[in-house]
Amino acid sequence: MGSISRPVHATDFAEHVRLMSADSDFRFSEEYEDLKQVGRSQTCISADLPVNRAKNRFTNILPYDHSRVKLVPVDDEDGTDYINASYIPGFNSPREFIAAQGPLPSTRDHFWRMVWEQQCPAVVALTKCVEKGRDKCHQYWPDRSELSLTYADIEVTMMNETTYDEFVVREFRLTHLSEAGTPSRTVKHLHYMSWPDFGVPEKASGLVHFARVFRQKVPPSKTCKPTVVHCSAGVGRSGTFIALDRLMQTIPTAEPFDIFGIVYGMRKERVCMVQTEQQYIFIHHCLLYVLEGRENDTGY
Ligand SMILES: CCc1ccc(NS(=O)(=O)O)cc1
Image (cartoon, rainbow, N blue to C red; front, side, top):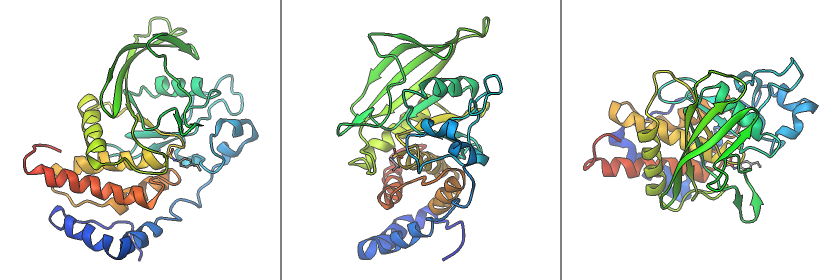
């Protein structure tokens, strides 16, 4: 079935999920299959340059040329503007987010340059650094013992760190060491630790709570500076989180929910956003959880 928009009103949503889930999620499988080729004809020429190959964690998860984030080039050298990261639309603006792969040891400095140059107010991390003995993301921030580390002329200092059941919230101060006189900046770091790669969190409530804390700490900004969202490849868990944030902000507007259209739109910007059918279904379950709890709740 065609169309890039499949809106469902809040009053019909529970019944819609029930119908889509019937016969072992038969209609969810059909709908998710309709997203398979979206965006795939677009080019990734920069990502594929030999000079950039080692900057990609996965050879099959590359940013499209048209939506990739460009670093300020260094001495006009080839490849110095490259990072595996893509602008993604949100509820509030067409470039509300940057979906990025988890930094590698060789791209950690590029990551902080991106955060500085794009004036990002926050970073949402959705993976542990190591999961089941596999490296998923290089630890790109100082921990309590070091407090301050410098990456590419940017000094990153941990100002505070608060640990909750399923996530950690940190606050970093960024000081550019070679831009004398430029004020230091604060970047919030929200780190969700309970989301297995290729899977979904055990319960919708944990991720919904995390998404609410994110919006309490990082309200929609008038400056429209992008929030970085990363996991390991920057597509599965990152796409799922961005979709959920957008839907939770839709609730108070009484507009219909267009989960198919949101994922369609994200996949035009970055490959594989919401990487599994289970993640696609989980977005629906998170929204149901919020809607069911809404009667005794204000806002989203
Ligand atoms: C095979 C490349 C690949 C690895 C990991 C993931 N998961 S993630 O995007 O949620 O980090 C997605 C794709």
